[in-house]
Length: 106
Length: 206
Image 1 (cartoon, each protein chain N blue to C red):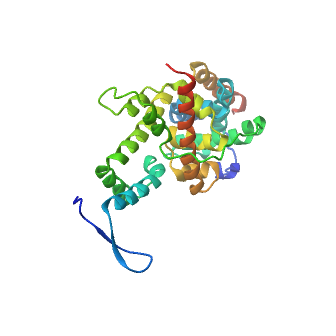
Image 2 (tube, chains in turn orange, purple):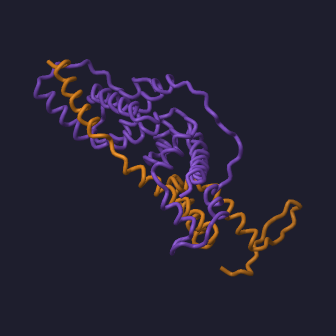
Image 3 (cartoon, helix red, strand yellow):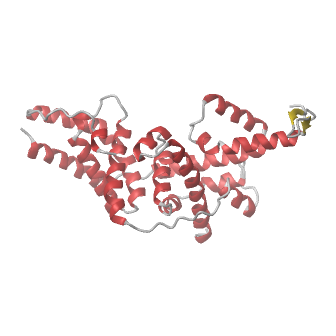
């Protein structure tokens, strides 16, 4: 992206003016952060998701933080997924199902 | 959620033979038992106690078995079981606990944990950024503790959305709350988890 690029906007006074690049990026960052929750849950519409991904490809600051959040979530999931139901619980449930059939059966 | 919504059809019970029973039980076990680990993990996070988690999972399976003929084959068995369990939990265990909830309404910043780690970093460790390196070492005890500390409504949303990856739509139906509420609870819940993880690491330095 051309660093000298300026974007034309209409100010509150109705005058056309240009915004410096860093301010445009700031707005894009704010926009991306606002959608962080849904982005991480894959709940964004495809076009919104693409927009964020495009921003992340351009903005190192956001990329680092979003990558951190994604890593945290997947790490939490991995760790918690290692917990298994006790064998005794599984056996007890199987026993109860059989018992249920014999006491309510034909 | 009332039972009629969970178990929509109301065909009169028919008399079935022993072999039918046997076949039905095998079908139930094949479709429902593979989800026992996920249910147990969620039950543990909800009740915060292995004994109650056992009871909650057991009751969920018994109830599901009772209404198995109303389960629509081909639909999501895990979501169906979770819906039953969430209902049982809300109607029974939560009422029993009646603990006052300490909800703090202070504002929590975005990227809470990232910012704390960035402030305290001891320099790069490997190829990844030091913050990510730290996160990859988070232990299951810390996570369990962080989720257990969450106020009820945030805890349920985090368990369903982040640990089990149910859609906002499904969670909104399970908890009977609007989708916007799912989103805002999750957003806040995640920050609270990060805050608790940070507190845990401060209390348990390694």
